[in-house]
Image (cartoon, rainbow, N blue to C red; front, side, top):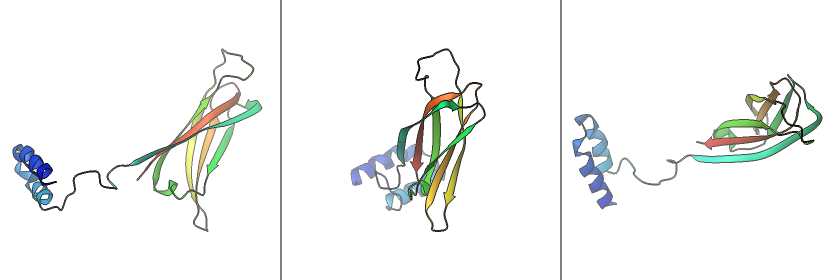
Length: 139
């Protein structure tokens, strides 16, 4: 560790005087260098989850998904994507368009945490089936 600090300090010689405090703190062990817990975010992925229906999700209609209780979601930034899949019957040439319109965080009176994701058909044709993924960065 001393060799690492020495190398770092040698590398910082050209740094302006504004950063002297940082170098001093680093040298005194007040700042940490390395792979300590808390310095790297955890990325997680869930999915794909599938939804299917006949005749499908009509244009303008919305479908919702709920996950929980999950104590890990309350300290996470979340993103969700919904992907329309080709029609099961094999027809092609029809445009299908979905949008994740909202991701909602919900805490119950019993302090359980849920996440709700809303998928809307924003196209002009029904979507017979789609897959959804949810990913996040845990702080």
